[in-house]
Image 1 (cartoon, rainbow, N blue to C red):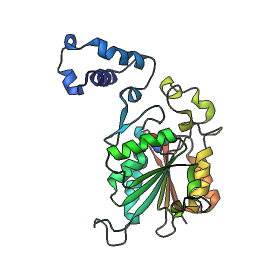
Image 2 (image 1 turned 180 degrees about the horizontal axis):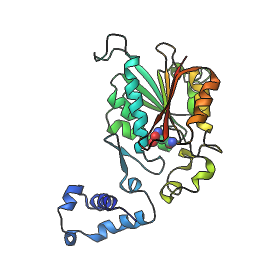
Image 3 (image 1 turned 180 degrees about the vertical axis):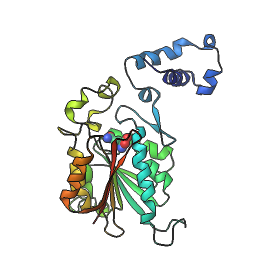
Image 4 (image 1 turned 30 degrees about the vertical axis):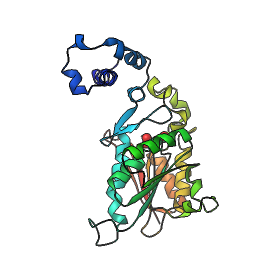
Length: 281
Ligand code: GLN
């Protein structure tokens, strides 16, 4: 069943109207030949965001296609936690003053770029490097950065997670230390994917969802490697979105490294574990 809300979005999109304009029209004024194909696509479980080509996130519209995960409301909590931590990176006594330092962030598995771009847009002296293994995804992220006017402070590079930031990497500019590493990595256990709704399992990119046998493949790598790339002063932070059942395992992984302090799990609005945050020691 398609909700009335989604139906309105699709019909309005097909007819080039806003939702408000659509609601003001009588049904017999609408040309079904224009909008019916879109409803047919939705009936085959294609997500509305792919049909209309955008998805709202943090009050901004992000361009999406099948090469990127559709931004989720849960991920707004991840962005919120990064924004809350921001004053830690400003020089003492300068809070609220004009931007004076550059705060460098990396968004690992940037996809549509929704995290990187929202942060760049809300935090003026931040520069973000978005990394993704998919060149197709990075094209979308670049378009989004341009659309939102932050392309000068967002750079998108293909790569394998944090590999691009090691001193061995040929691109020397990537070897600087980072103040913040943020990621919404694939974290769904492989065998759970088949149980998800068709909108997700049949339409969204598998590589953006599949976190391996226990769902922790990417999270594990990020927790182990992030301290090598985070600045020590002011102490850099790692922010991760995690699965609702993964809190205890993720805390244990972080504690085992012995390299973090202030390890925290933040719960989402449903009271489920959702965000991991920690500072490097
Ligand atoms: N960073 C993107 C998002 O949060 C993509 C994440 C992913 O592909 N796992 O939507």
